[in-house]
Image (cartoon, rainbow, N blue to C red; front, side, top):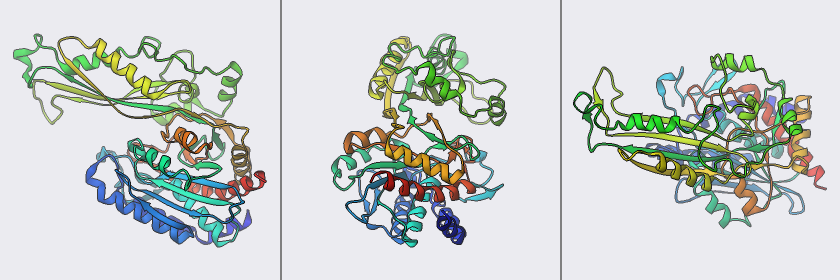
Length: 456
């Protein structure tokens, strides 16, 4: 451990400077205007993998954005770890809510503020620097492969094809991902599962043009009003989702499992204060921890229609739209849920409007076994680095490709993240603690050490 700490301390500023270089690339995969910057980011990642000591580094073309691959096969008899991450980021909008420019990393109170600081540039880059550390100190105990993609934030459409076409090249014993969070640095945790995702868009079309709300209001259906009514009907008085058959197959946790989940350190008042809300909200009969980890949800991610500019324009809009995501739990299939959502929305739409429902992307829920060698290696690594055993938790987010790794490669995934839920992921002023960044670099070599030892 001292060798690790010494190397990190010696290269502390360079590690931070390199991360800042990475964060300055506006690698927004959802917006075509950033295409050139996304491609530059892939080249940057490839260069840094080569500099760290990786071999056979390649920027692999896909029908979308490229996947960066690199490896260090020390000894074919040793176990192999496949590190996955993504270099693309969410759009920075709304820009006016950022305190500093989203692609000019700024440090305040020991935290790095920038889009992608935590999700996932800061986290995957820890692995690149940890790999460099092990190469330079000649302490690499196993083989490592890297697969860093550029489309995670838009559904990883082309990664699935890449994985299925490169099963031999990607052959490994475990996938290691840092794209999740911990409870806190004082109470480290290790996620044992992720929720799945079904992402939909609803378009409600009314008249063939925008209308004068005085002349036509009250006589022609307002698409914005209809859309709001439809969305409001998707939850009942207990905040239970009303789509027929939505909960079919949901795997319920036992009373003992729910108790263990709720034993994790959690301060509800601190949670509310951080968000400036007086009360929490959610499905009746479940705690906040359960609502964000083991229960499916339905949320409106965006809604628009009509006039939203300055001043007033008394218009009855011709069209209204909403983007809606559903987080799913084990027992739910995202394609089936997408179909159920589409049929339900179409069935509740009044004849006064036309409805179009589009499924954008999705992913399968995932649970990682806690009795595996890889999970135990992560558990021991965190325990040694933090001086405290990690608390097993369930993550509320989604990494769509994780289930595919198991399907195509036949291997499990370990979710060893170092972010915090309060890091403003997907929001303005995304941040990542500098302490977490360095702590991740210190912890990752310990995972490789214990994984190699336990695999013997």
